[in-house]
Length: 185
Image 1: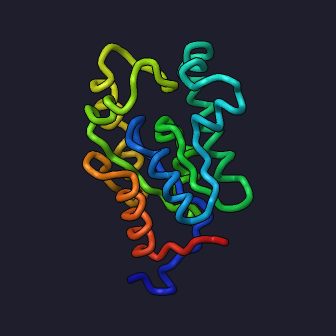
Image 2: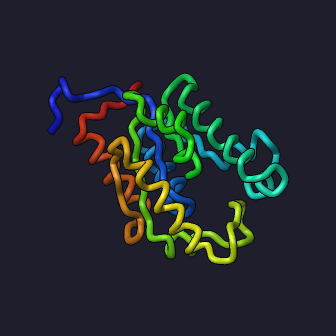
Image 3: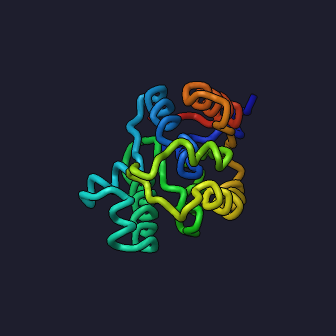
């Protein structure tokens, strides 16, 4: 149990991980439990831009799409009030985003998943961008580079391979509480 001295007041919970790791599913359950709104990268960008991230990648290019994803995270964390934020995996490649995730008023839940399972969770017709002929190879490469960056600030880390979103959300909240996280009003 964390002592009062170790506790910290958190205004945002960020749920990070690869595409297909379950960020939106787990994040929505955490948001419902806390009674906080959820900010989802894909939904926010789609509402703002009028196009899916897949369409934006095709029309603007990957770098411009990633810049939009980074901006969404930074805007969500700068917004007044509390929220659960589910950013795109690409934020792991942006030092400003990693610095924002490391702030004391942000609690991070890092979802890991086997790349083969993540690849099965979305189809080529989905709203997400499709990378190459073999998404398992792409996601494995992403895990190799992005997992260490997400781990760099000691988040609560949970595997989603064999657990339901409800189970993962409950474990995330339990582990955050064990670390002394208190929820801002």
